[in-house]
Length: 138
Image 1 (cartoon, rainbow, N blue to C red):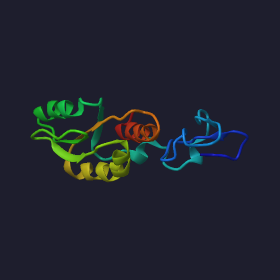
Image 2: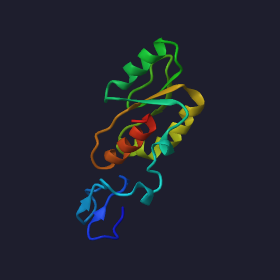
Image 3: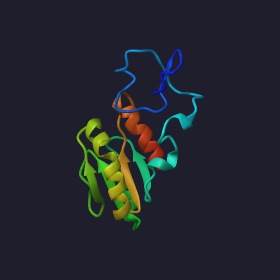
């Protein structure tokens, strides 16, 4: 956040959510990305390809990719089906946020494609989805 002006500006979403801030904030549209480290897409992108899947659809997407002979990993709320590599299983947005970087790095070593289940983009989920979109190159 940049609070140097009359209105605070969110340069990138983080663990302190806009809902938790006690001041009016601007979403950072038009703000200089240079003002916040880690805002470049490549900063979050692992060596493997990352695909995002809707809740409840990640395992099916991972299975479809694996059926084509691709080494596929899964980060989701459900178990990874064979032969998909289970990189991690998370219970909620907070657990995904806490493990995200470690899991992206673990996937780099193990798979060609990592399928990650999306979370609702509000509160902490907004920051998590920002990082996941950057990891996916979207």
